[in-house]
Image 1 (cartoon, rainbow, N blue to C red):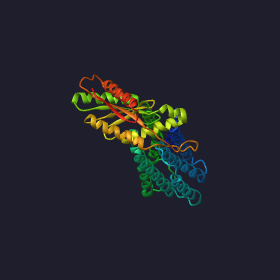
Image 2: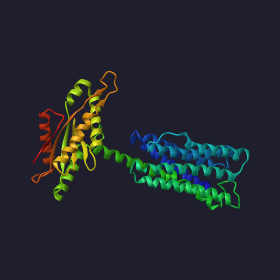
Image 3: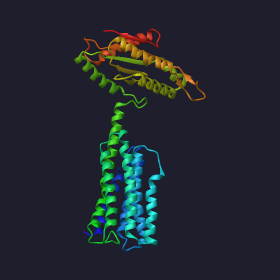
Image 4: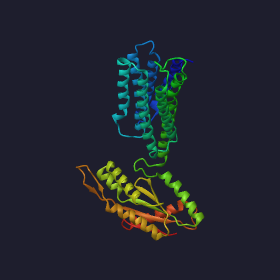
Length: 390
């Protein structure tokens, strides 16, 4: 099969993948759409560049070679930007520098001083630099998310960069200098468009899997995390509480639950509005999360009520942990930035603690005991910690 035919087949595959990504674009979440748009445009630019390179013997080389190589390199740079946007990284124009410099060089070695090897060296070097930069950035982003396909994408980027280096070395060391990558009878000319299609074809598939995994993670997070406070929600608290209750019951180890309720929260909403009420909830959630240490866990039960799961050695230990949370909230009032509101809004909480007992049948028994203790704390004046023994 001659190189031109391979280029055409590869280009068709790229266009099909780019079109598929375009069809799925609207189904992606808003935070993924900018990255997907860059990836789609990058794929189309690489396809367009491949077409221009494939017709270089029937069109002015001084025109189609710079445009073709420029399209390929710009497409790769857009892939890099797409992966940066996928990870939420800051925008930077430097990722386009290798493509710009190489395109200027190709213009010179196509229109002013034609030299095939020089063009190959320039475009290969720029492509390899861009791909290595993209691979490095995307690999470092592994700590931000747990997508399995991230490593597949890094592998594809590194493999394509390796091919670029090999391409430059092959043509630089080839004793029979070629004048075009369309020259028939050269095995590397046939192999090159196939290898070059790996990133826009296989890479696009991997990118779609990345988006799918990110959406799955977002759905899982939405099912387990309270949207307003970013704490575990009621469902998560319940399932974790059941797990810890069962483990404590089997092992005979201590376990306690604390129900935390914001004092006079309705007054906050009535006086300052629900926006300030939401700020108060977020503030209390942040303080609780900061002070709920070690294996302890805190989540939002609903409304102005939170639940902390405490692996305390005794009721006294549980009281100390709860008192630490209560005092931290009292000592750190909510700061308000609205000029029409007070600069500070003091907030206090009441906390009731229930500990596992031999007669308990399930986690709900511990939680009911904590609710009873919370009722006592409110009846005794609020802003205090109370315990309910079995």
